[in-house]
Length: 492
Ligand code: MN
Image 1 (cartoon, rainbow, N blue to C red):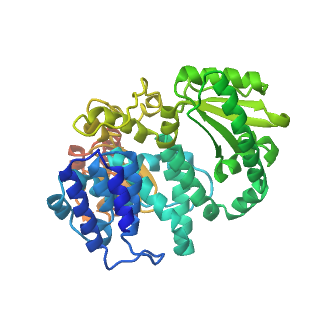
Image 2: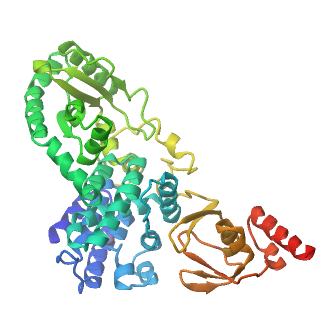
């Protein structure tokens, strides 16, 4: 555990002031004391978990408060420490991040439906984003889940399946959407065996020794590539290979009639070149060396994927005529592919941290292509000039997402009341509404609903709406329905 703390401190070296480091040390002590009585279900001391989460977050370089909030992320929920204490012992921002996480954790993904309801899953992801209000909260949530998934074996089977399903259907796609493919892949592979045990076993069997054999083959190609590129004054920074993760192999197998031989990118070669010109240079040399497979070249540098992914992809007939997938990219592109939005922050942070020790300089990417995809659901996303402000995002300024007791998500305008909610469920529910409970407690009918709340409408049969509702309901649709019902009353 001590070594975990040291690693976190190391990662923050040069990025935080002495005063901030003191606050971090204080958070270690505070969390250790708060969790001292607890053990994880795996049997280890509880404190290891928040420290591992903080270690992941410290690698993302999101500023000291995100790391402190990670250390403290479970003390409010699990140790009943009031938020006011976090605020007074640490600072407002840490308290804000911890409270955001607590809110996100309260919403439970309930699904007993077997059919694939894409819209509902999308709504659930949106609700998490709407509740979080700050991207750091999402990132801590993802790091938290990643660690929880690693010790999942210790939970009871029912909990295991639920957590895994939520991981696979909600959190991993969220990670991908934020461009964090590495975390997305880890989340998927951690959940895969619990959600689809048979398919998981089958995939492992199909992949079998083939992966190892392919890796050995690629290992032989590395010196050949290295030599040829150097001869042409194109010194690569690194040549490595990455293995496709099991869950994505499974998805691809389904498309390819379960024929593993068609999955050429099971193991792909990855060449890191110092700049974009040299990426294209290397591509030319490789195509001279080994004939390209027609139709397999993709230029994601000139035309990035919607989430911002950039790389050159090609497939060639390499030594002995075997097909090999090759990806060529710059170090920045490589880092972004792994860390997504966090990588953008690293650039932003380095650019903005003038007072601190200068680290190796990256040039910030000129275009945030990935914003194009995000634009629809968030307005101001990233602003390199206002680093910290840019992390606070109004994902859905004008919408809230609330739940029915069954776990269905209802999307409403901000300021909506239980009456608006009731009419969204059904006109009859609205007409007969007599009371409302939020998270089990009675509230007035003009209460302003908040994202994440569970709403239960109490119904009185053969009751009519009250004209006083017209004064506070938010949606014109609700108003119209109330008026219709009242008109009907006078007709009788
Ligand atoms: Mn946790």
